[in-house]
Amino acid sequence: MPDTRCSAEAPLRGIASKAVAGALAALCEQRAAKTGRPIKVEGTGGVVAFDRVAAGEAFDFVVLAENAIDDLATRGRVDTASRIVFALSTMVLAVRAGAPVPPLATVDDLRSALLAAPRIGYSTGPSGQHLLALIERWGLAATLRERLVLAAPGVSVASRVAAGEAHIGIQQLSEMQGVPGITIAGPLPPGAQLTTAFVAAVCTSANDAGATRALLDWLAADGTQATKLRYGLSGARPA
Image (cartoon, rainbow, N blue to C red):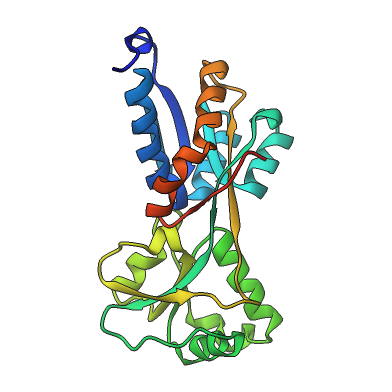
């Protein structure tokens, strides 16, 4: 039975990168069912979420890539002591459904897939920044510059691949998994892979910091790992 003592209290309000929003919303529904305290989660592009919290919009908690949370901490927008690693996310390459699937066992395979693709979808988030760094490091920036297709904040790379606007796309597994119209070719190979830590923190604008801290502690607990895995994420213990 839910604890109805909290039901009349204002919902806890969070904002998160779309890379983790699905898993976060599912877990918050589980938590709300246990406590009776409603929790509202807004999923959007990481850049958009960062800007809104940085501008002072009131949230109880935020979940973003670790470097973004660190930046918000320096701006005084989140409580550094409250940080927990919510989940880890790896990068994958996807093609449009029915298209040939390139091998991805080695860095050379990935490089060949990039060179063969007329259009390459990427994001504004950590995965996109990592891809651009790889291309630069491999000396392919000039060759591939005109082929790059940037998905706007809040728009998934998978949707651009499914629509035929990009022949391949690279982004976190959690944003590719289960999207119709694409085939996931596989994870990026060792030497090119990036694992992103998504961190949750209590916002300094929180209306109920105590309840929010309890929520984050619960989100980092072992019992939440199965839900994270269903959404293409791996769990992690508190930072």
